[in-house]
Length: 478
Image 1 (cartoon, rainbow, N blue to C red):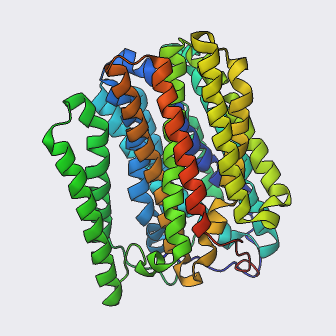
Image 2 (cartoon, rainbow, N blue to C red):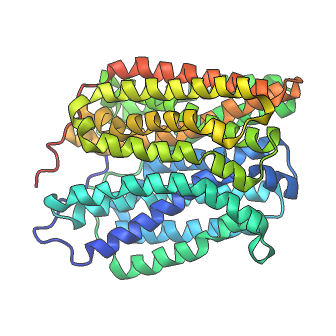
């Protein structure tokens, strides 16, 4: 369990400068999770690789992030949040440099995995330090800064990636989407050394390296065959690997329960899964984030490979959805979250499903001549629904978790978000390319993915009934 240090009686002197440093790290992660979707076709054309390279650019990063996040927070508790923040930022900058210098698909995917692993060390430290630095009356403002940053990154990320690819600054082409992290990362490092507080939890749990290894292996055994199976012709070992993944996840659950009963520190507190609300939230989160990220990848591939948009035009075509997400966040933050609670999740899922379905109807009507302006209204509706759903999601899922389980629950939920992103990239990307290989046109392949996404949103709607009606806010009281 990750245990946060209580806020000091007097607020940390340079807390606002420190918050800026933490947000800079958050921007690096958010941009790198988005930019490869836009640049992937250009990258593949330049350094080669099969269609699976396009999937691995996203899945390698998010899968590494998922398995690393489970232990990333505990490293800060054990060895100090500031040293781990600086280590994570340094590794992330190194991974970005290697991405920018990559000369082969294998080197690029390996560097993406390195980025994800160090990002998993970097990101949890900032949240813990905010709890230490800010007094209760300012904590809401500090955490509230993450919403606009996430929204602005989702708006600017695809457009920035498209512009950087086309601008070909200093002859770097697509490589600049990674090299731009170097000045941002060095700024975060310098600011971290100067402004971040030194701290370590007095009740840090020991690392469960065996549990981390089991979870990592189980996830890899699932994602690898889903991405590579189509190119290899779905040999028997791909299905054996997926079956082994299920068995290893089951063994992981047994091992964690056994470790908990013997008085050890499990990676995931087993009692969490006995809570209907939390278990339902994990299912809802896995399905939602899988569909959301997988759909985003296929959309950018469709606009560039099917509609022959330039990278910048493809980024601009996705802009209405990103703006819709911002609108949804703002509306939810204006009191709807507290007033509607779980009903806001349901409304968001249905609105997003309606927007995605409307997008499918627009593509069917307009055909290959569809313009970004024709797509904009339904994508904006989908974005608004996404923002309404995401705004209260984490608070409501964690509402039924006991205080002593909060650290483990938060880490597990965030890891599920990243695992869902990797799974969605693998599954929906594979469906899309499989249909293209079978002679299906780009438009029809996109339609299949659209209706899969609508179905996943309806599953999210149903599983959300397991969640409590309201989030719990009494923890941060001072």
